[in-house]
Length: 107
Image (cartoon, rainbow, N blue to C red):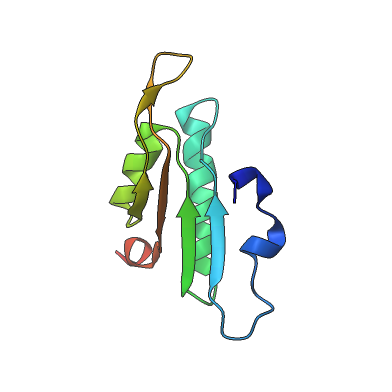
């Protein structure tokens, strides 16, 4: 399955009894760090305030700083592909992370 083939039905399994809620974040990015901090703050507040903390958050970060921040907040690297260079000359690698921010948000 390709990322472009994912649908809401693949990601939102809330109607299946006993299933774990899954959130998928492609990559959190913005035009400047201030706006990025605002977006991340909104995401963290949303997840913190959910009554059910047994969720799985999955991400495919493109930016290396997002990748590192995700690791620091508790996401584990599930898969990382071969590194390359994008059109701006920056090193990029396809990768997939998953985890839960519960411990990070409680500290």
